[in-house]
Length: 199
Image (cartoon, rainbow, N blue to C red; front, top):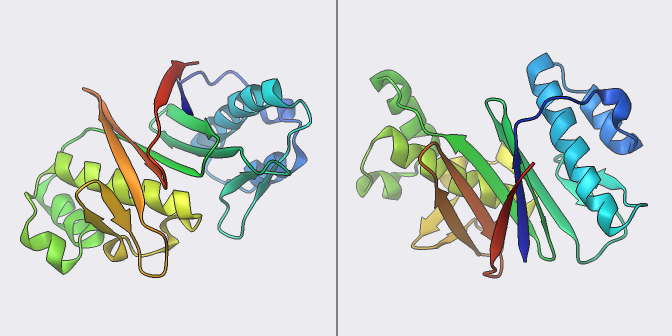
């Protein structure tokens, strides 16, 4: 089961983060708005994780992917957009991404098109803002799943039907939740049910 938590409360400070690894990671974020959102998503995620095990700690891989320490069957992923955030807690590896629906001016749209899509994708792609945002969330959720983040060129990630892959990495399934305001994409190696909770 994949449990996804959606929130926008920004009422906690860094002093309330007791996990030292998380606190150190948050202190490295220089953008104040991004830091505030990150503090709150980690605060609420840790709150949920501590219901499972009060001694849970989070560690980070070399690409800053958060991992649950000493729990082989407990996985997390998080994302934020604007002042909203989501996090997932699952018994399988997971990657999630969130993007709010918006339209781009032609120049921005063209730049995004060239940044996200490889040549073969461009041939069969309806170039509009919503299609690009949805594709972005699919590719980014997959890169979070495999633990390397967007340091990898998004054009190297391939989407075929309901699967997503990258050379030398395992193929995954994805599901896009199409809300009137946003796209939320879940990437995982095995199909699974999900529940969404509001914080």
